Length: 440
Image 1 (cartoon, rainbow, N blue to C red):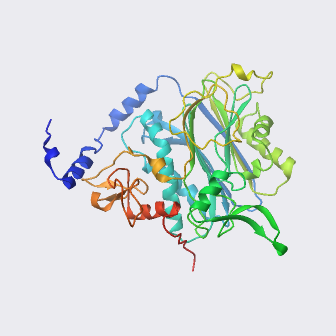
Image 2 (image 1 turned 90 degrees about the vertical axis):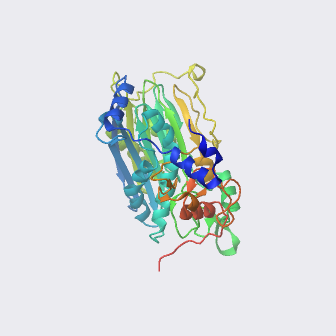
Image 3 (image 1 turned 60 degrees about the horizontal axis):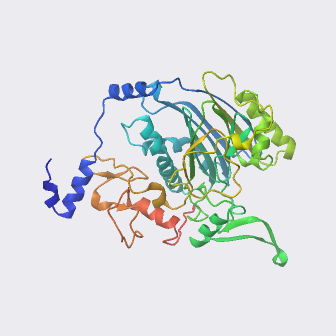
């Protein structure tokens, strides 16, 4: 092995390091062969349905059951389902629906197998959410949107969310678990502390006489949420960094219920699951919306997507439990990620034959991208881990470096960010005054 690079100066060493990590080109036939060899068992069926009632017309949803990790290879298929609950207009919801998936996919290295793809997905989701937010804010529009974004690949389910739309999982035996975290200031003390530490203020509306009314909001802007995509006029302490959870279902599969807060303000997670058990997905989604309407009336946009992940030897999932389950006999979530943090106190009991692969909810970008984010190089250039723009090593800064205008502490410890994404990162963390753009 040639070790001459040891004796080169620091700049040459960095260039050599980047070049040496260039991903080799892999022929398409080789990739397809790998996937076919990995598909030793038949993939579960994915059945879905949706239903919606509009009050303001700001809810949007995305259903893409035929995505492919490797173009032209059906064995590399996966499905995407998402809810976008807009506010202050529809622009952010529409923009996110049209662009978020592409931004997520562009952040995943090419030429990797399915297991590596699943491992890279949580970080790619973070990059995709932030990239979508940056691009939307450049439009100068002031609307915002919550997002709950679900990727189903075989029995592995990955959920990324900002705001207060939710995704729940209902499994055989009537076990219901929450796969998202609400980013409402009223209910999330940790998010309140983060917003105030980053330069925002949290309080209720004041009326005549100094009486405070309504839910907790952040100021400026008066938004009730601490995370969203868009909301350019509020302040960059409202971050687009999602909570991400990845689980592997048991061989009995499960049902996902993804819905906007028009559902969850009316129904508990368990009530929503119980209302549609035993029904096919399309009818189940309609039943959830009907139950929410019966409970609360149409006070908000109400959108629901139901996804059944059905193993080949099952007909419909989940069925109503015949008798009360013995919780002690169930399997608690097994494998815990070392990055698993921010588990809320009000989270439903996570029991059932489901394996937790990953969970992370930090709003700090350096914690979400880590230090071993894969390099994707082109002729000695590095790519920004967020926007995927090529840049010379001398032009990029590590996500772990100090603030943009005083880059200290390990400036070459990856992943790398371009100048624009570094400024965005510092703004989200309150390291520079937030300067929201507004329309003219």
